[in-house]
Length: 164
Image (tube, rainbow, N blue to C red):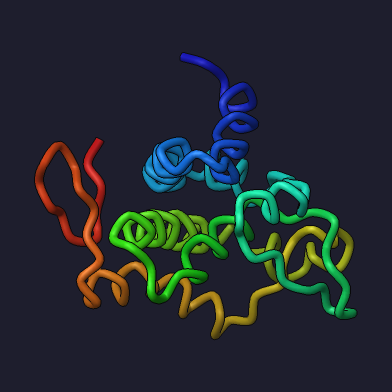
């Protein structure tokens, strides 16, 4: 099996692809992989140039000082995918649900909490989350599933989950 360090760059690049199928495949991968700590760490610490987000139509946001960030973390990319399309197409809704699941998985690894609490002090591409924001993001997949967002897996509609 390939080492995680070999898989992470292309799996992150696919998240900011302009090709919807590549983005959906990457979201499926990260949704499932981040249940384990190693991939969750890789996603949270990955660095993505802000220009890649802009090129893919993903909102970049502003830094604490009001400027545009130069980089975003992989967790930040997934957070944006999970929360930026409230009136989305069914495909975008599925992408949001998968991204929300990956974010939720990462945030449930308590040993990684420094990546969204203290590490942003020295690593500007990481985003600080309050306890309330983190709790809302952990619950987001359930909220989306209650809104009727579903994932199509091998021809079957499955609410709130993906099956490899």
